[in-house]
Every structure is written in C-alpha cells, then in structure tokens.
Image (cartoon, rainbow, N blue to C red; front, side):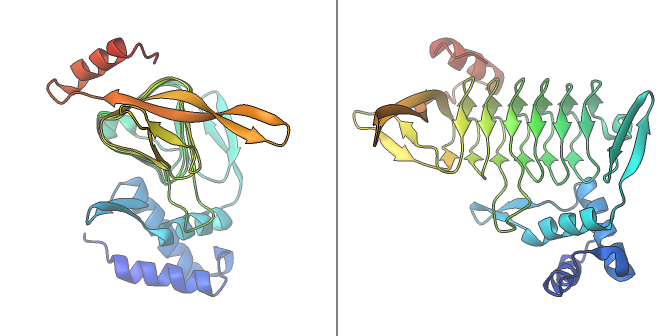
Length: 277
C-alpha cells in the first residue's frame, strides 16, 4: 500500500505546532505516530534521502520519533534471561528479515536493517537506516537517525552519532562501500561519501578541519569526506593565549583505486598507506 506522505506529514506538523508533542491525550495523533514508526521500522520511509544530487532530511520524521517517546510508558522488557527497562521495544524477527545478529546486539524498534546485514554485539538506535550487506562490528554504535549505506564496514568500537534535536540538524550519513576503521567517531551530521576509507581513530565533527594533503598546497574542508578518499587522523598547530598546541584534524592522504573491486581495493589501500583498522 502506497504511503500518503503529504497527509501524514501534515498531521505531524499540525500537532507539533499546536504543542501536542505529548500524545497521551490525542488518540488520533497516536495512531498516526505509531503508523509512522512502523513504516520506518519496515524501511518504507526514512529520515534522510538522496535527491537532486544531495541529501535531504525529513524533519517531520524526527518530530514523530520525539512524539513516540512522549506517548510510550517505560516498562520491563524481557528477552530470555536478559531484562531491560525502557520505553521503546526491541527489534525482532531477524531470521525473517535475513539479518544475522550476534548476542548481545540490540536494535531498537523503528530502526531499519536491510537483508544481509551482520550485527556483531552492537547497538542500533531508533530512526537509523542500515543498507544491504553492511557489517556493524563489535561494540559499534549507530545513533538515532544515522544513515548507513550498502556494503559498509563499521569496525569495532566505532561511534556513529545520533541526532533528534535540534530538529533541523542533519544526521550522520555514510554512503555505499565505505570502510570505517576501529574507534572512529563520526558525529554532528558529517557526510562520508561513497567508497571512502577511514583509518583507525579518525574523529570527525562538523567543525573538525579536514586537510587534503595529496597536493603541494593542502585544501581545507569541513563536514564531509569526498568520494574514495583515504583518511587518517592528524594534528595541526593552533595558537592559544598560553602557547601553541596541536589540535586534532583529519588528513586525506590518497584515493581508493577504481581499477579493482571493492574488497581488493580496500586491502590494497590498507597495505599501501599502512592503515590500521
């Protein structure tokens, strides 16, 4: 059944503007919110989408998630011998979805996980979208509304930041065929374009300086990693009242080759640039 996006969006926006974030007294909006979260859980609608050459954000879906929080009561959730105490149910029926889940990985209801995904002991929050054949490795976290593409490898201990408020903020977006090395931190709506490779311990925020050092004069950018870039952590000198100190940054040191397939290219990149992952 086709979703009438304009109609349900209008309902959410109207309720939000009328300060009805607390849905407990409005059965009509409760039904709409529940329907929206169900469709997000099924992957029919998502917080962010690619259109006209750029990523766009459905802010009204983040509003619906916040409404969902307000209408839910905190309860005990029992999963075999495990017990949780929370408002949001845990995602289930992974066999039917074609998703491998290694205990004690947990994904919240309202996130979408595509067929072929492997979840090692990790955490996926509500509103997140994970594309096909992606690996979420041990102790990695995928924050609320983060958007992860197809065939992405999120290595152990990686932190992908979530975002619900402020409403207008973009989520972290990782496009297809990206490799994220161990202990990387990606927050504040950074965009990692297709086929990029991030070495271990790269930290990116919206204000982190990113230097392309592959030319005679470095090019500075912020907020995104260009397609096929190979990235390592670095520092640069910055003057403070008490002296000059070295501040973290990210360095683009090369490009991933297009002449080989994705897996072969990844292994070659790691060897060529001596990256840890």
